[in-house]
Image (cartoon, rainbow, N blue to C red; front, side, top):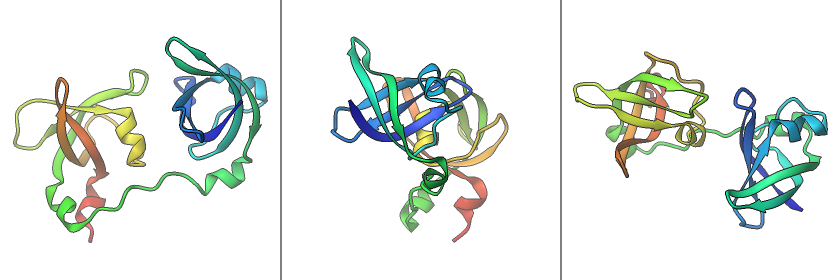
Length: 163
């Protein structure tokens, strides 16, 4: 039995992850487990207790035992990390080249620079960013990933400009 918080859940993709309170890591939860409990989806930040089994690919939730009421969890949605003045100055203007929710990644182009910068779904969730679509103007911080540049922070362009 594992207790934890929903790290993210994507109803469209049919799965999500729970971060275990005991430090054992992420537990994947499929839509069929959520539906068997009688819910259509889980909400980020929602407290859950579930049975899980260790597989060769990590923890897999098998049965939801207890789920925090949605009304309580709704107020616990992630908020964007604060931006200090130094970070604000480092934000770069970019445009979303494409993003595929099913695949969980896409690319942005930094204005005035050649090449693509990798954007992962996990970064979007960590930054509490709303839905991204092709052509969106965004502000990003970048870093070096194993295969090239990656987005490490994403903000709405308007939010990046406001003090």
